[in-house]
Image 1: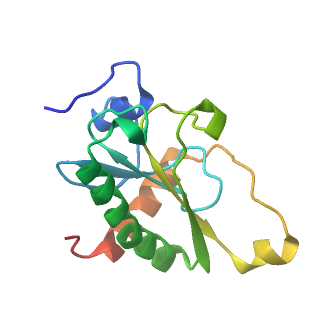
Image 2: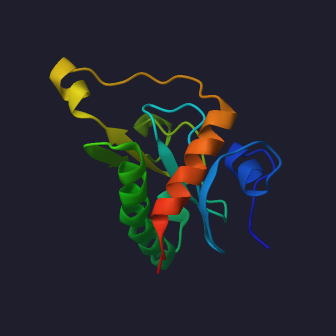
Length: 145
């Protein structure tokens, strides 16, 4: 049983009570596509236990979540043909943390954006499109240690 917060949207995703596009799941973590992506393939890695910020997490779990990031990022970039990616993890409202549940963003990037010199803007993604993309990403994940 995981420590969850009934008001937290990410805990609702963990409990499968709202639609989501899962890329990877194990006993400690859930990885899914952001419904409001900054860019195509924007993925979130979250612990299944609810922690408002990284300072509340046991240190070993912090290490485990960050060890998962490169494996997921490689699968995402391989699937969508990105040229790079940003990894971010915000803590607190002043750091632009919108959802108070620890999450690591993997935001794919493309050379065309660099040429334009623009940061993409968020949009609302179609859940069925996200689910289709999630299935394609899963095929590139392989074995996660």
